[in-house]
Image (cartoon, rainbow, N blue to C red; front, side, top):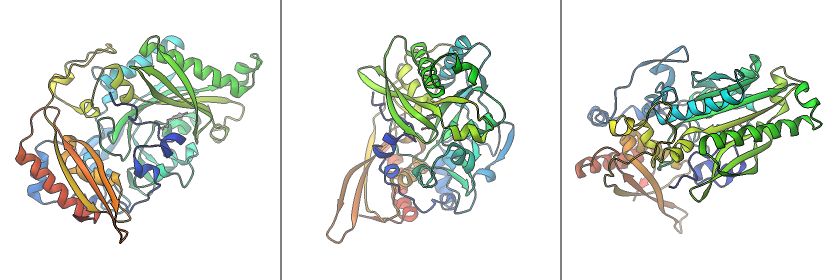
Length: 432
Ligand code: DAH
């Protein structure tokens, strides 16, 4: 299973420079991709698209806050939230006990409840709409970091975003006095399309704060004490979830921790990165009034772990309402192996165009998802060249496939026709 890239931690040095997603590594700051354009499609086009969509509620309650559609999608150039993303708000897969994501969350809770009885406060209903300050500044993400770009993050306006990681809640919970906590939630990132990437996924954040009493008797310095405790805790978690697996620690970089590590486990003959973690930057603790403490923190991606634990081959399946998927999982049953119910044939369509300076793959993928929704299985760059005049051409192969039924030629041709039209009109590229 090609899982090695499924939402690698966003802030590590490796994911910045080695990411498969060129747009993320190229520091491309694009023109905001406005939703006003996204909603200006013809009525017949809308009708057609809605055929595959479940109805979207216009008011949601998220973490006790009532959110209307107009609070998230605005006719404003600083807003880049499309319909497809609005429809995912409030789904809360992580709060469904029968869903693989909820089952995994509960299994992690069980580990913390057993290892540290009554210690960790749990939050799984915090509103995913956060300020730029919470998402980036509070966790010391540099002002010029690529993750802040409109190409990578969904902005509601210049000051608020759909959180792109659960670390967005760290500082506030520390300020409120919590010293041991787990935050689970849906996180949002503009991304490319393939079997392990989806613009909405789920993370769990863990934080533990120590006081001088904890490390003073140990004979090691505070930072080493926290780092050792962190590693022990997370190795225990990996054993709880995967049984006796081989593990290794990789030194890495995150803006919010120092030292920082990634944990990899050896699973099905591959090293798999399962989480990012480290000793919290002292500045974060200081700003929340904790000058005499040290802390550790970790963040893990639930889809990535669930795909491995439950043998789920495509990340879109997590969003499926098909009974043949949903009925295979039950509360408390971690690691039941998913049995694919059938595999319908994919259909490939190529599209070639001359790109312009603001073109990014994430923008292309947003157009494709806006039209094809979860029928888009993969968007792959298959050809790329620059001619003598300096014009660059890209050819992408789009794979359309339903997890649930066979698609007709007419249906796919219409999708592709709409993609061609919108790629031209929204991305201002010239089709070849
Ligand atoms: N927020 C990081 C990401 O999404 C994951 C992470 C890494 C969280 C290290 C942490 C941490 O709390 O200490 O890529």
